[in-house]
Image (cartoon, rainbow, N blue to C red; front, side):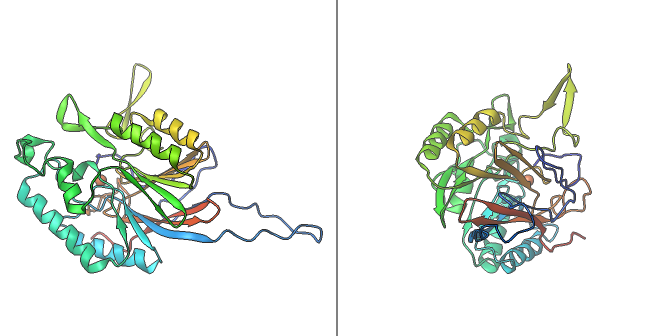
Length: 329
Ligand SMILES: [Fe+2]
């Protein structure tokens, strides 16, 4: 969502900075390169791959800007790369938050068509702010009593019974969070946080889980870019970042992740930028956007991209942001 004043960016805090807007790869538990001698014990075998999947965030499908062709190209690229699963990151459609029903219907129809015709691997969905139908009632033309108002529409379209959930795949645990809550002061705004019910569920889910874990949230829980790429401001000697851009409850959630000892990788979208940082052994990564800058040429945002992730049997992973192969004219 947000209109940020920056171009794609890759960073790694706590470690050395990484260069390059696209294609930077990052593996945890990478073994140190060193010369071997006759007395060295035999090298341990490399951990084998448990699952290769794509973090495919911020599709923003729309009848405009050739978004269907761009998404079809991206799906072909991801599958050619060997992804066995696609994990979306929210903002599946261009916008349903403040858009009239007829346009929203057209977006969801295209969304289903592109996946039906061009995707052969399992897909797991996460919701973003643009997938919430009509919270901005004045612009969407809704009164809030419609059965598909709010999250109900996206849940129905994706056949999901809950907007947050978890599942296991190939020896790894996946937690899908629902980042977007109402702004009590602005019906056309929203805040990034998990509500008390979701928080209680998360605490319980983490406590019961013995597997290495990937978390996906639409809005970043931790991100590097806001404070250095123009979306923050300084007021009274304090850096101020919008509560719609980064989770307001980041400290609380990170504390839960640390306590669990299982969370390895936390994936997000929302910013349409690429960044990455590691704190307390937990990697937080923003994987850009499949639509780049909303399918238009926009040097402020990333080019169309996705992240290819290899999860290993020993709990380590490799993460790499790659171009989708679609060039925006
Ligand atoms: Fe987005």
